[in-house]
Length: 226
Ligand SMILES: NC(=O)c1ccc[n+]([C@@H]2O[C@H](COP(=O)([O-])OP(=O)(O)OC[C@H]3O[C@@H](n4cnc5c(N)ncnc54)[C@H](OP(=O)(O)O)[C@@H]3O)[C@@H](O)[C@H]2O)c1
Image (cartoon, rainbow, N blue to C red; front, side, top):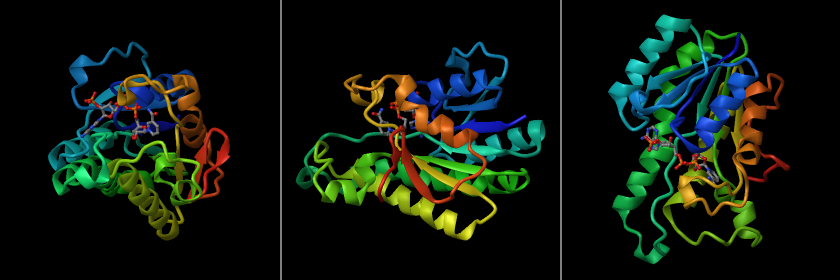
């Protein structure tokens, strides 16, 4: 039995990935801010209260998973926010702080807290849900100039380096970064051109992958440059 905890699983990519993984036999711990409002009916999806921006909430989730499972095979840091669509010149520190708190500090908080349970698993995996907008290469060569805002791309670039540092220093953990692609969810007012099946492809593959390599970034099309 593989256990996978997905943060931000109340809706969108996280909820859809939870359902797909449950259908593949994975026991999914669906991290949500309010477990009372989830609509999961699958027996192998267990909603668990988890606010990635709150130390006490994360600590309580660790205790709950430890008591029920004793170890965690896969942690998926999926919860994320977009921030506003203001121009960089009009974006102040408060907004950047807020986006980084969820998109960067959140994954660090959750990873740090769950690391002992991951290390207790046989083949632990850590999956960071990032974005092609966080790729310096894609931004630099002009392929991704469709999001001229400050906080979100910067936060995903920081998340990418966070993943690289974990990969370099935790040889026992298989670390993957996944880039869903522009997917129709609340995140973008359902403007995304991809379906949820397409947007969860790389994530689902990373959760099921036990071979690696570690410290790489993927979309459903293949390797994404940093
Ligand atoms: N959709 C895209 O086109 C796209 C493209 C590239 C990358 N991504 C990334 O994919 C991930 C999921 O995006 P999505 O499209 O599924 O977005 P979404 O539909 O807006 O869902 C975001 C999820 O994150 C949760 N969340 C936000 N702040 C949280 C917190 N402090 N603690 C716990 N959960 C929190 C939300 O929970 P509540 O329901 O409680 O608010 C919700 O479950 C994000 O990291 C995003 O950056 C998305």
